[in-house]
Every structure is written in C-alpha cells, then in structure tokens.
Image 1 (cartoon, helix red, strand yellow):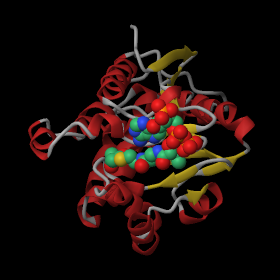
Image 2: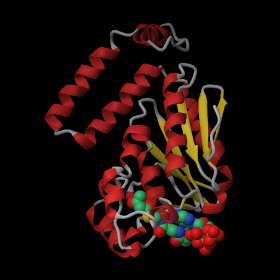
Image 3: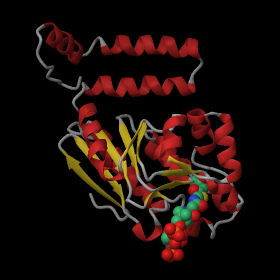
Image 4: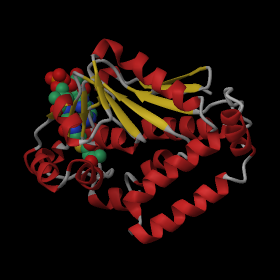
Length: 258
Ligand code: CAA
C-alpha cells in the first residue's frame, strides 16, 4: 500500500507508523486521516501484526489539525462534512493495541491523536497542549474530554483556557503518559514495549484493551459485569488452555491467536 503522508513498516509482529509531513510539523489534514485510517485498518486485518506504534518526528508528533485547511472552511462545511468524525471511525475504532510515541509538539489535534492511543510513551522533549482557544475555537477531536479524564478538571481546564503547554514531566505526574524516556531512546523503547505486547496472546490483548476502555465509558456496575463476560469469553480460547498449561508445565506459551 502506498501513502502520501505517513510511512508504514512492519518489524516482525509490530507495525510502525510514522507521520511524515515535516514541512507542516505533521499537521493533520484530511489526507493524513485517510492514510491513517487505511494503515490502522490494514494493521487490524493482518493476523501477523499484534501491536502498533504511531510516532512523529523529533520536533513534532503533530502540531494540530491543519489550520491552513480549516481557514478555508465555513461552519456549514464543518457541519456538513461532520468534520473530525472520521478520527473516531478511522483511528479510535482500531481493535488491536497501539502506542503513541511522542517527541516534541503534540498540540491541538496532535495531543488529541496521542490520547486516542492505548497509552503514550513520551520523550523528555514532549510538549502537550490544547491551544485551540487562541484560534477562536476549541478542541474537536476529543481533547476536552480525554485530557480531562487523564489529568483531571483543574489542569485540563487551565490548559484549554490558557492554551499553555504541559511538558513531559508534568504529563507523567498528571497521568497523561505511561512513561518518559530520553528522546534518543523513544523509538527503541516504544518498539520494545510493543514487542512485549505482541508476544502476548492476541485475543487476550484485544480484550484487555476493550476492558480498560470500558472504565471510561460505562457505569461501574455495568462495566464489572461486562468485564466478567469478556473474561469468560477468553476462557473459551485455545490460547487460554495453552497459557495455563504452559504455566503448569513451566514453559513459554505458543499462541494460536484464537
Ligand atoms: N496547521 C498547519 N500548518 C502548521 C501547523 C498547523 N496546526 N502547525 C505548524 N504548521 C506549519 C507552519 O505554518 C509552518 O509552515 P510554513 O513554513 O509554511 O510557514 C511550519 O509548520 C513550521 O511551523 P513554525 O514555523 O510555526 O514552527 P515554530 O517552531 O516556530 O513553532 C509551533 C512551532 C509552536 C508548534 C507553531 O507551529 C504552532 O503554534 N502551531 C500551531 C499549533 C496549534 O495551534 N495547534 C492547534 C490547531 S487547531 C486543532 O488542532 C483543532 C482540533 O481540536 C482538532
């Protein structure tokens, strides 16, 4: 498959997707969304691929939705195109795990894209922000909701109202990112983490992802019931038999993916 705005490569069972619009600091235009949608669907459909990493450049993961594209549109265009809705169906709908490896600017839509990942690993150079207010707008790809759930109301509100950036240390303290690593180690660290996830039973990985996401979308009692049902579904897989037998026999499991 060929893409205009991203690079995609497979490293064993890990798909590495790199945003590649350096001239625009990886600003997210409709072509980036189309390319990412195609790449994430291909990843989800390929049984040989078990985890993905999305990254940008040293300077910018992504500096936001493409302002030069948006400046041309009026409110009717945004409404009639249901602008930004494709991120939900094209990226968030990915069923297999993926990690955002963030260095440099992750602003506006860039911060929102990183927060669509299952978790973020940040370089010590990472800067997160929702500066849309400075453009006379507000987040439109989930920032006001996901940032608030990640760091709490006070900090999210302050960031959205002032447009200030949060550095990697604060992002770690606030729970926005899983880990901070030196910039030079970011990709290696993210790929190693992805390889660990890729070595797990794939259905169990998908269901663990679904379960954790339930915590953000469902009342507790209902989520606990769904968690039990999903657990019970996993007990019907061949990989459950293999995983538990391998433990008892003191050997590594060999996964069938079903
Ligand atoms: N859209 C389009 N182009 C962008 C862009 C964006 N979001 N961010 C940067 N660029 C372009 C610049 O226009 C510039 O292009 P030219 O050389 O052709 O002028 C190029 O990328 C390099 O950018 P700068 O020269 O500005 O680089 P810098 O190092 O001086 O500053 C920056 C870096 C602080 C990130 C600055 O580029 C910036 O503030 N960018 C915009 C950030 C922003 O407001 N993001 C939110 C967008 S709105 C949004 O995302 C809505 C939503 O909720 C989804």
